[in-house]
Image (cartoon, rainbow, N blue to C red; front, side):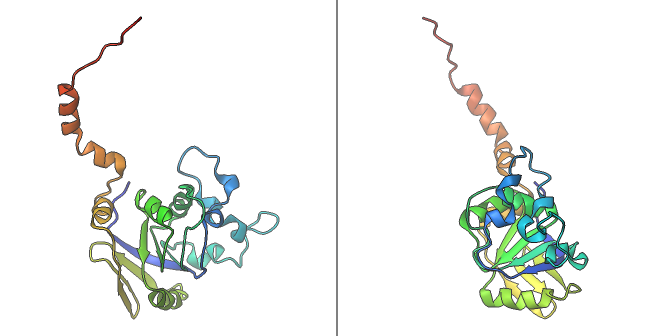
Length: 200
């Protein structure tokens, strides 16, 4: 995965509580075996009308927010089933970070494993930030190194597990972490006794 350090850009406000993974990416779009191509189905039931055409009133479809890289949402974001496709669809759309007062635990973990940065701020801070980014001209900076979110007239700090931060800053997913110990793995494999199949 790509390293996450500083994210600077537009933020899209979606101040709704309890947005679950089926609302993020409905179940009928989970048939792909690869991780790409889910962005077009993000928030499908909200973003499309009865005929399946884009609803121009839904904020994701508004051209002034098309380049947003940060999603600002309500509490308990990513609840429901543990589908990994939910963070995949957010990342595939173009989001690099999601800011909310709280996240479902498994969703939060799934985000960090692909380099999508979940940021927890207080409800008061998220409300203030939502107001600021309701003007699409206002940009947001999310600095993982300093653990700060900065916008026009706004600054807040967030907490993150040190190991998770290390992995994100260095672009280390579980495979990359394993490969860092390749020498030790090779040494272990070379030293352990071999076993031959016994045919009876």
